[in-house]
Image (cartoon, rainbow, N blue to C red; front, side, top):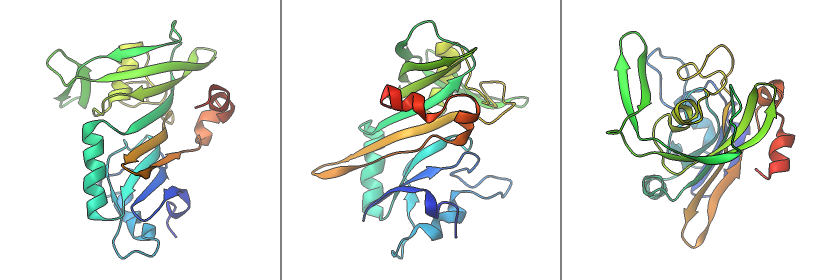
Length: 225
C-alpha cells in the first residue's frame, strides 16, 4: 500500500486532499526518483481514473495538496487557483525573529538562473506581483514560528518573501536559507470554494520535524491556526 493512502485528509466524489510528506516531489524529477505520480494508482478509492494534482507544492514542503478525481473538477479547481479564490495558509520556522508581530509583504518576484546556483526567485520591479500576509506565532531563542497567508500564488513565493521581505530564510531551505536540515515549511490549511457545494477543505497536522525544532502543534492550537 502506498504511503499516501493513509495520508488522505479530505475525500468526496470530486476531490482528495492529501498531507504530502516533505521530500516527495509532485512532478517527476529528472533523476528518475519517485514522485507523486508513482502513488496515484493507490488513491483511486474505487474509481477507475487516477486523481490528478491541481497545484504544486515544492519537494521539501509538506502539507495540503489538492487532487481532482475527474477532469471537469480539475478544470474548475485549476480556474479557482488561477482566480485567486482558494484560501491557503502555511506555517514555517524562520532563522530570526521579526520585530513586528504581523504585516504584509508585497514584493514582485522574477525568476533568475545561473549555472553556478541554478534558478531562484528574486524581488524585481518588472516581476509578477506577489503579496503575503504574515503573523508571528511563537519565538524560541533566535527562531520564530510564522503563519503565512499568500494572496497570490507565485513560485517559491513564501520562501522568497520570508528571506527578502522578513529578512530571514526558512529553516532548512536549500535555496533561500542555510539548507543544512529539514525545511520547516508546511501547507497547514487549504479551502477550495465549490459554489453551492461545501468547500473542499482540510487542515494538515504539523509534521514531527517542527516539534523536534521546538515548535509543537500546541502553538498553532493556541493561535487558532
